[in-house]
Length: 200
Image (tube, rainbow, N blue to C red; front, side, top):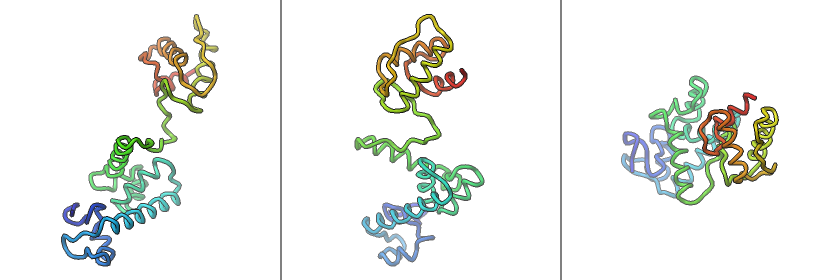
């Protein structure tokens, strides 16, 4: 398999313009030749590890680092970092300007199909919380909702326990909050609910 105008070699699309000597060492120096899957996988993993190290040195963390490493696989670490500096997005330096985003989307699909964990959450984007969720974000939502209800003194304050579980009582409280704030009533604490809570 040769992609990227014939320059990307094998399943891991190792570009002969930048990795020609490695390809020659692994029996893929001639036009159309591809490295073995095992050799390509090991080399691709090394490239990604180097991209992660570069991104960490630049202060990237979490999902931003993951996207940077994927983008840099296409644009090179220097090219992806230049795109971050000039455009705020490492994909700006990639073919089609969406390489990292596309890799993360595909990875998310594969993980979902295989029953794996979701992609690491971007810590700068709050979770959408719904019935069945558990964790410290749920407890924080409950504290903020309770404070809002106490401050705004509605006719009847919905009852819920301050714990880390998003159960039916919390879903009802969110619905009441949404109704009072003229939001879509679905019992889900998304950006609209968080935005209204922040205005209190």
